[in-house]
Image 1: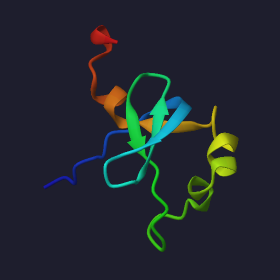
Image 2: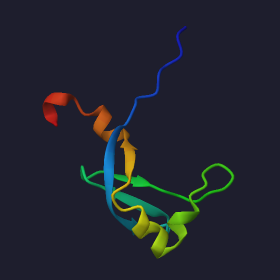
Image 3: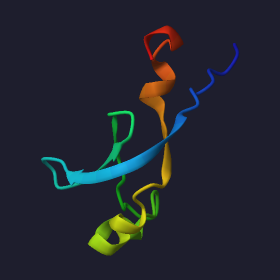
Length: 76
């Protein structure tokens, strides 16, 4: 049995941030999708997300959008 390959995301720029109902930070991407950007050591270390300065500094940075990768090209 072949291992299933994880889908590769497409690079999308961060255009903003907001907090979800659990107060976790969510990046708003230029494509309209969203992605959690948690600081949850030791698994995920994103100390920058805990301050307004850190979040501002990451506006324009790219994250891989898995949702965009799953949309058939003809629908994009």
